[in-house]
Image 1: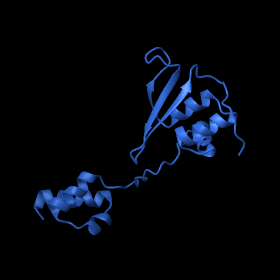
Image 2 (image 1 turned 60 degrees about the horizontal axis):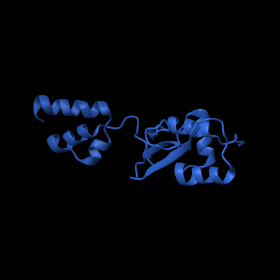
Image 3 (image 1 turned 45 degrees about the horizontal axis):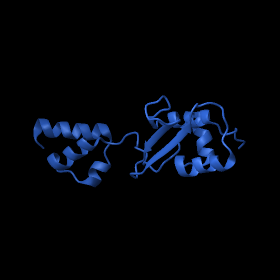
Image 4 (image 1 turned 90 degrees about the vertical axis):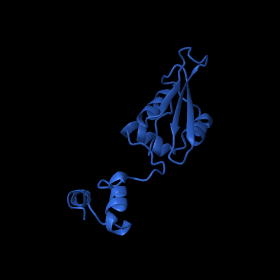
Length: 141
């Protein structure tokens, strides 16, 4: 894949596409000349990156760019550009939720109130689980 020249503008676009939280800006609120973003990960780490102000098309040198990707953004260059160009955030180890996953409260009620086992609940669709819970509430069985 051929990559564009890494620039502050693309760096900010990456952060916004992956929904990083802007914690500081360069408009005098912190006394810095950077825009700072943070991203809390599922494993408990918090990533932090700074973009020099103004956020523009100023390019990063190869060494600095490598540091930003590795130490601040924790992504490969492929993942970075896929996010910037296509809006597809990198996989960060968070499990994918199945489209038909049962809500936790529904599973809890089926286990605690109805008395079903995990294996039986795991084999149910959402509609089957709701129907089973409704039967319990109306008939007590």
